[in-house]
Amino acid sequence: MRIGVLTGGGDCPGLNAVIRAIVRKGCEAQEHEFVGFRYGWAGVLNNDTTPLDVSTTRGILHRGGTILGSSRTNVYKVDDGVNKVKAAMKAQGLDALIPIGGEDTLGVAGKLHEDGINVVGVPKTIDNDLAATDFTFGFQTAVQIATDAIDRLHTTAESHNRVIIVEVMGRHAGWIALYSGIAGGADVVLIPEKPFDVDVVCEHIRRRHASGPTFSIVVVAEGATRSDGDVITDHQTTDSFGHIRLGGIAVELEKEIEARTGFESRMTILGHVQRGGTPLAFDRVLGTRFGVEAINAASDGDFGKMVALRGTRIERVPLSEALAEPKLVDSEIYKTAEVFFG
Ligand code: F6P
Image (cartoon, rainbow, N blue to C red):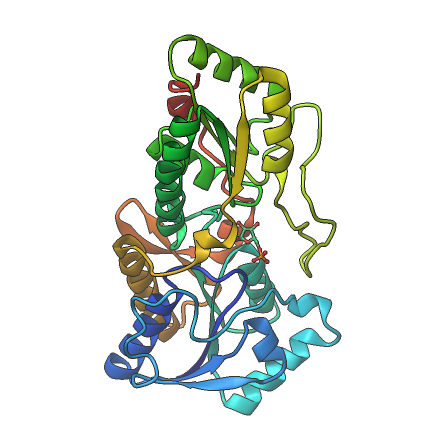
């Protein structure tokens, strides 16, 4: 078979591990050939390719980002998009595509499958918000980066008797905030799934300071909302999938917490640091297992599927199941974080 591989959406630690695994297993054990599309669906629409074989995928396992480049391109927002995809596949002599991405990139893949194109999806996102898989690759690395940052911010919080508000990514899911908040010993964790009241947040902080400590750490997900309001963001722009750009809730929280409690407060927005650099071993292993199973599915002609982690096993699930709705935070885990609030 000849197969096209692409990486779409935000870059994510572990993408190169997936690409390497697909190509190594596909070339050496199954005698397939590959074409890499550059910059996600944009590369498919423009027939913009790069050679993908064992030699071009050597030495990339530990590297962050993606050797293919990425973009947030929606095939279904482009005139004649589906026919352009079909034309590129014809020009390259391809039998199938393996898109590696989150809900947007795989959402396009699911629709293309309905439009008669052979696809197998691989679930990627630091946000961990894709259903039908226990974890996406990239999430554990992002959580570790956020946890390391919280550990470092403790130093300043403690030395200066400050409240530090740490804003992490995750879009409309609170997974990164919850996991890094628990791992980093946060005193309050705010996530989109549990709209918050600033008075209650301040109450936790006051109670904690009344019992001895002179500093606090608040972890807030970028998509957290007030119980009486909407998403708070510094931006107005939306991407081609209609998602508003998030970021900036910590700026408002810093001011409000300081004004209401009288405790000196500072905020830190971690931003793209969370997606950068070398993947943790967990994400390299998960990415490698996903890549091998994706090429196995393509070899079997098992299209319209996404590879998924279920418990400790890698399975294939219908793309439609994975895309039906986002996977939001499990409230039981949030209850565990709450034990340590205030
Ligand atoms: O989906 C991954 C993610 O990092 C989100 O957590 C975040 O909201 C978004 O991408 C940021 O996107 P961009 O890189 O386009 O600013």
